[in-house]
Image (cartoon, rainbow, N blue to C red; front, side, top):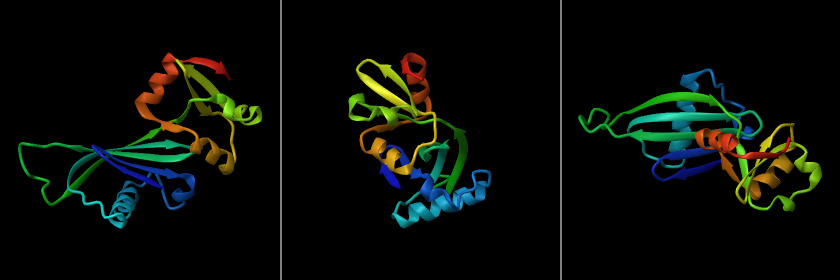
Length: 157
């Protein structure tokens, strides 16, 4: 699990953490989010748009964007979540494709945009191999991943 707090709150959860998640049960998702954030002493109040990106190969990326409601302090001591679940396919941005063995790369669709390469999982891979990719890459998801797929050249299917 990785928690990033800046303008948004981003939670990255691998499949290992998702045993108790039922993505069709919004109440369970809310309870799990509150429990996870309380455990890390994240104080929430207000209205949040919550985008849950689900990649079957990796897990979840939860992007919580606080909505600024200036007209009232209606949510001053409360929290309200608007949750949207998006089935997605994450990309893994790497700078040097030659750091990976060819056998591993056969499990990916490889996109190139400029001097950067992006890997998209096409075949099931072991968690150890995925860990190797994660150590040497940056995860791209959502609109940014769609834009990269649209604008990039596929160099290996």
